[in-house]
View 1 (cartoon, rainbow, N blue to C red):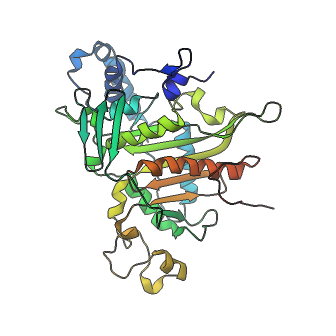
View 2 (view 1 turned 45 degrees about the horizontal axis):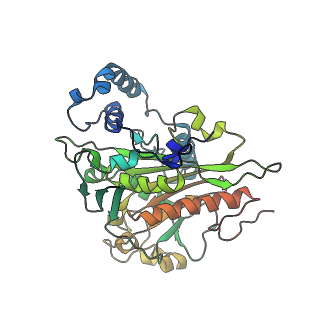
View 3 (view 1 turned 45 degrees about the vertical axis):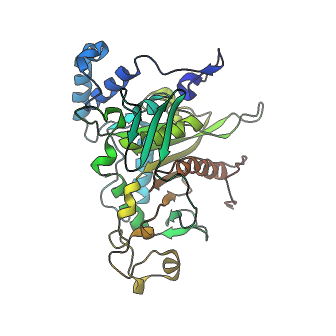
Amino acid sequence: MLDLEKKIGFDATECRGTPLPANIVERINLNLAALGEPGFGDPASYPLLQLSDNLVRNFRARNALLRDGLRPPVDRRIEAFLESYLAEVEAEPVRLPGKTFNLLQHGMARALSLAPDADHFKSDLIESYRLANGVLHNPVNDRRTTKGVFHVAEGGLPVPEDKKAVPKVAFARLLRAALQPPEELMALPFTATSPEQARVWVSLLLRPVICPEIRGFIEEKTMEIRFFAPGSMACNLDFVESIFGNAGDPYLPENDAALDVAHWSGHTGCVILAPHLKTLTKRELGLPPLAEATERQKRDGMCWESPDELYNDGGAFKITARTEAGVVVTLIADNYFGYCKKEVKTQIGFAANLYGLCEEEHAGGTVAFA
């Protein structure tokens, strides 16, 4: 039975939205403590935090003994895809963030986007306000053009003519850079008024439907998508889960798509928010100089004349790597909420096309195989 309260914050029995738990601050502090990060307020004010101190320290010690940290099954599937896809250009396998604040239920991202004792938060990318009916998030740019924004890495499915084709080596370097955001991006708004700032990744698991149930013909099919955002961009994940729902703790077996053989479509997505990628140059990403570029590279701007030319002229973009294996990994070099929503819909369309027997409004053209 679908838990609507955890998924979308809705009480089905009373047909109303459910408020955040009264102890939400203590719950968040407990999660931050498990990550070894400072929380909000005086720890002595939170009995649950004091009671669980030994358990938390034991958890952190056990986790530290694991070689690469403990990652949920969905993350290991994404890493296996990246290892295979990037084998020719990367000597060392890419690892997704192991230390992340996992959003276990709807509403936690909203609580993380403001300090409990503040009604306003401002950074270079976002301004958030507490309102009587929730939170207002106001990104620094709330409109975007699609011109020159959509980039696709080579080496997978064919790159459409209206998209920019990106050499695989450039995608690999963008991915490495995306996973190393600057310190200021990692600061969590929840601790903005505290003496010590928590600096963490925030992550979210989604299970959007790509094919509805048709009784007697087919069961409902969903794909799995993982979102990773630097702590200061927790509000982006608040927006995403408000549309597509929260699929819960990715570590729990009941939330592992691979164990849900009747309802998983077999497709996996990953989205990493990385606005700092706009500062990288074409040269440091391994793009060729103009004299060595192909005609398409010249057309798409995947080459440089001056060594200090910024990738995509320093503008916002999102870049995707995807193959017929059914895994898609996207980096979004912006904090615009619309790109986050659109990317989930694009990945649903990708899965719908590969799965077959289903159709989605953003699925675009056809991928045909003999």
